[in-house]
Image 1 (cartoon, helix red, strand yellow):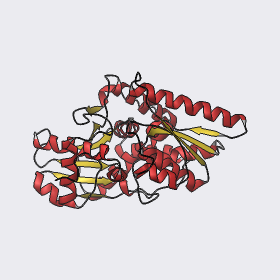
Image 2 (cartoon, one colour; image 1 turned 30 degrees about the vertical axis):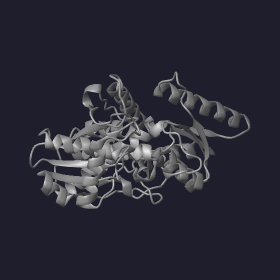
Image 3 (tube, rainbow, N blue to C red; image 1 turned 120 degrees about the vertical axis):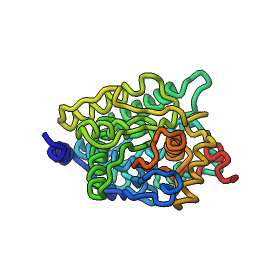
Image 4 (cartoon, rainbow, N blue to C red; image 1 turned 180 degrees about the vertical axis):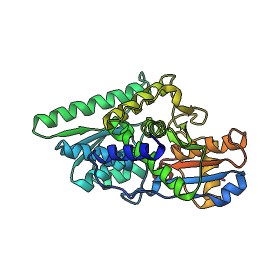
Length: 354
């Protein structure tokens, strides 16, 4: 089966699945002319920050089209989801729920404790949108993973109480990283390949931030299903253990199975760079802030200190150290998150000082 037939087959599988029309696709792909000249590579950007629905887009809109579509098909009236207090995914889930008439309930981990007298960024938007927000502080004896699990358990218990009252609840994991959500980025990879073909370019690599792994899983699944196109490089924005690639592969395979594809991936298909997240999630570093300033001052584009800034820092370092060769064509996948530029000082660091 040739590449075109494989693409058509994947597209047909995606078309069979329920999908809520929430965003604006395809999102733009274009060359960063001035930064390309400065760096000596052919650097393109995929603008998923333009995905809609509100002023603040992002990669989560792709996932939510399928997640909300699945919830609608199941007759649900309430959606639970999880994340950090400044979670882009949580805020976008609230927006999607308001768009389709469902009730959003959030359980958020307080990595950075919000100031109730100065509510900012996504927390402010969550309040304006009228979400039910439950903030769960971490306990001194807990790891981040344990806090996240406790947060999820509290949400499941809440959902059980509502279902006992006659509601139908839909549970969306952190980042929308489920087989349904990740399948959206199999479609995203197809979209990118169609745009590259139309533009007459053949990128060798695509760089994207990776947190919960849902976006990365979908992109790698799409790449393997087509057996063509650029390598996917995930830049970690939080600490990842040795089992991360294996979990991403399991998620990718579950997405492929949900679609009805017999393609499968392995952990070896994932390239995750763990070198740019320190000191931790939602904690700034100078490399990310330098990358944010460089893109802003060269191209007039904004990235954020939690996700895209750290991914861009990884990409820039790979160029400067020769991992990306001079003249190579590379795509940076902008996954959104600009609301973090208006978050607490603990998240921004010295971003505005230089």
